[in-house]
Length: 85
Image 1 (cartoon, one colour):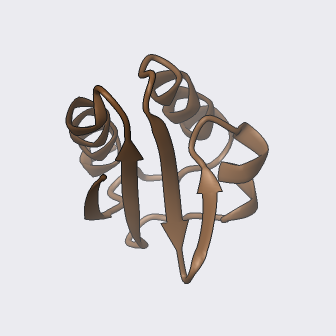
Image 2 (cartoon, rainbow, N blue to C red):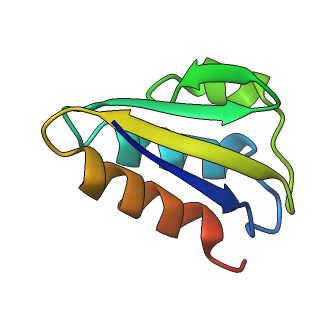
């Protein structure tokens, strides 16, 4: 199990389009991937789960993964949300 805390830097947070891109990236990995905000943990491969967290810019979230490619999954997804823009 790999975990990483990151601050979301995306201008619109993880809403609609950005959430869809996040889910698409999460689905590239075979590991179980989760996103956590304020003690609410959701499957990062679920668009409805991500949207339910209502993550805006500046929010700190925890990305975790468990499986064969867990480190790559966490690193890639963290890089996605830490990008400015």
